[in-house]
Length: 288
Image 1 (spheres, one colour):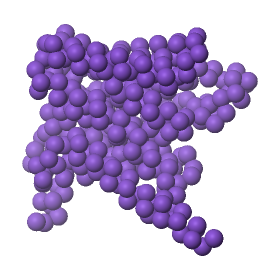
Image 2 (spheres, rainbow, N blue to C red):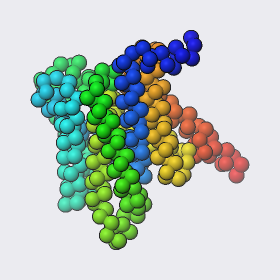
Image 3 (cartoon, one colour):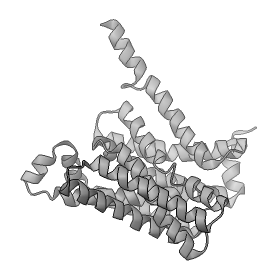
Image 4 (cartoon, rainbow, N blue to C red):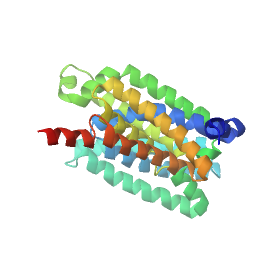
């Protein structure tokens, strides 16, 4: 098999592969940097919770549209995710419950509600599409949505970059200088929900968080400066989409899980060979 047949032919011959490539690369470019900031804020598990919290909104969008309308499901997911974020923030600020506990209670409720709604009015195949995504069936409207989410995420991140970074490391200082920490916090959660909604259009609600957190973890093992972390996270997320689609095409495997497994493989290799990885830490320990 030639290099052209291996790397180019699947995207040159099939339109659905080209649309899947654009969607996965676009999603990786914005979800990776958002994931880096989630890790720095020690909110990686909250990102996972939010990916499940969008399910009831997506399910209601599915019922209203009468089928797999990704636009309706995306709007529903966005409303549900933001609602859970606001409710969790309200509960954590008015009760003794911490924010992670609040997110856990609301996301479990949302997940159960979403599965119940889809199972009552849809088929098992519809439920599988919602849970695991339909990246090879993505249409032009969904591509516009994913591209719009990517553009908006990168623009907003560029605008609030400085206060967001300060809040990651010293929220007390940002509050002391009148930096509107809560505003930036909820704006950042909005970006998380937005990227998860775009993610479930392609990878499903169960795996959308994978394209956000795995590239972020990869970047932290390679470099220690934040700008380079953002670049490496975005690059590895986009690369995972490209390689994952190629592997799924040639092996005939499901595209969404293959993309996430590709990112997992890059993470495992990074874990071994990166400057902050396991082998180098063992080497220094042995020398000492």
